[in-house]
Length: 302
Image (cartoon, rainbow, N blue to C red; front, side, top):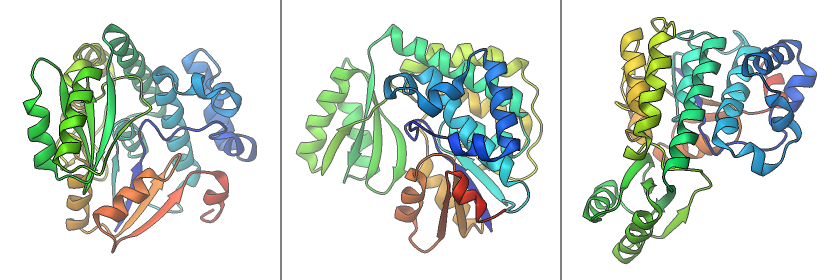
């Protein structure tokens, strides 16, 4: 069974989507529609902006969403997934490709989410880091031991790789304890805030109003949600899980394990970068993994 998986924040790069825009009319038209909907030319930043401009959450999230969704839309029916999932932001891409949300509504939701998250980041200094070489239980217990600071295990990515989210002091204290406990490394992540943590509560409440007003439809094929790592198809449950996602951990390792248990054996990462391909292979080296992140990749299937 085939799976489409969609990347989250951090996969962006300057030039993303440019060849797709210039070489494919469907993609060109969708990018221009996005420029009009957003009220600014996001394509200018994606194609030829600076790293600093692109890494702003309010730009990064819609940019990655557009790259992912437009690649999938251009692919058409050449490869049909049996199930879909997305890492954090990528869950919105998965829902649009699965026709739970329209392209327009998905983009506006992602834009609202990004701006709300950026605003939350500006309220209080916060950050993220990735822990390598320790098991989930040890990391969770050490996070709980940090007093008077916010720090949680926010992304369970694959065996031995967990992302922390919280205040800079909390991350610093936690990192020292993790290294003493035997972590191989604790590396800072290039993000602007503590995603999937209690520090995103204000963004969560802001997103809820937009979610409530956005039409949604039952999924045609199963969407594996970040919050539960389980398949969901009912529109009301999908919306509720998108709302909860902002301050709940991403259970990615468990998601991939459950998909494989349910019959998945071919994974296609659709969107910028190769991060998810690497994670899937670390979770289960026996499945087939492919990447489509530029027009040249797409041409193999058209």
